[in-house]
Image 1 (cartoon, protein in one colour):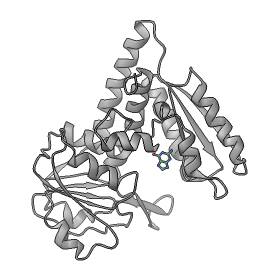
Image 2 (cartoon, rainbow, N blue to C red):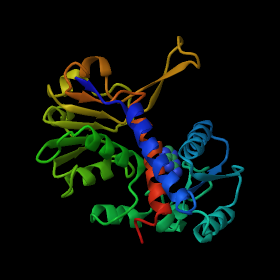
Image 3 (cartoon, rainbow, N blue to C red):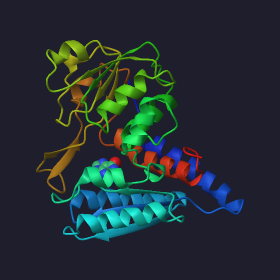
Amino acid sequence: MTLIDGKKLAQDIKAEIRAEVDQILASGGRAPHLAAVLVGDDPASQVYVRNKVKSCHEVGFLSTLIQRPADIAQAELEGIVAGLNQNPEVDGFIVQLPLPQHLNEEAITLAIDPRKDVDGFHPVNFGRMAQGLPCYLPATPFGIMEMLKRYNIPTAGKEVVVVGRSSIVGTPMSILLSRKAQPGDATVTICHSRTQDLAAHTRRADILVAAIGRADFIKGDMVKPGAVVIDVGMNRVEDPRAKNGYRLTGDVDFASVAPLASYITPVPGGVGQMTVVSLLLNTLKAGKQEVYG
Ligand code: GUN
């Protein structure tokens, strides 16, 4: 069994991005600039956004954090988005989700210029992804594709089973792995809460992607010996022995699955490490105007 080291991959990719930024600066250009909009005081969102801003600094990007109180009006938030769309100094930006209840997330996502949508959440980017056109990929699927690529894990002709059909992980993952590309060219099954006999499907998988959102859901008896197991889960479970009273665990029961797998991503230290790096890669593409010209 090989443990896929997300932390090491993330460090390697950050070093590559840093080197590109140095080149851009050396040739008289400006560093890529990411802006992040954070509304309200959700503690998890604050941690995520702080992490994104910190990662920008690590690779030499410019970053701007725009913080607004939870009671901001829809029109004011749309005004901020419009300003960022028009600001030539900002290459890409994100609006951290979830937004407070009274705000319309869909309208905000649609208001973002697809050219600056480095989260890859706008339907224009999703549609371009589905058609194999240049686009910004959503961070988690992008990170998983990089992992498969960098570990030289073959996907062509393989049976892939994706468990979970969210529009930011399961569904894009199924599209990317079935596309005519490398990684890609796989035969993909997508399973979800209404799937009958889930284990019969997962046991067929050469590559199993677990994006369910339930702690330790995939057990050893659901996995084919030799399978590649990608764990997208990020679940908080209570643990009185842990410093802050909880620990993070994936959707895969590591203890029973790891001995069977050929490759497996740990939680933490696996897929999660790749998501911020994917955002940086998209921001670099935005700075270089690589996607839309
Ligand atoms: N909330 C959870 N994940 C994400 C993400 O990737 N981007 C944004 N904007 N919000 C999130």
